[in-house]
Length: 134
Image (tube, rainbow, N blue to C red; front, side, top):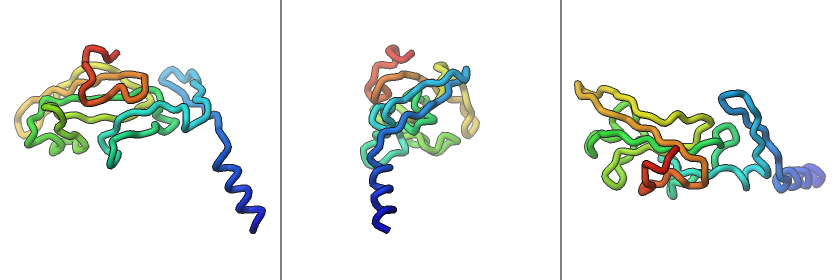
């Protein structure tokens, strides 16, 4: 029993190198996961909205902004959206990200949803200047 407890402690304190594949299947090494992993804001993380990205989603921070009004933000198919600083937003970590805009319908109205991508820690903040996303 003492030997098993010691093994668990050693496994928890050891740094690990993980290989993560991107869209083109080229490996990307994340050294010392989770310490060196990408960190993003996440709409679904409580209470501080900060997330150390899981290894499989540690390539991009994403911010999606919809033209939904505050009363219906989060009520559509995009249920995790939150109304922050005058915008209906959703933030997350992602393995892939394609910036751009798409339209969707809700209760007979058409709305736009724009995706912004970035690759530095916490770059998808609520007040981040949209034109700085790649």
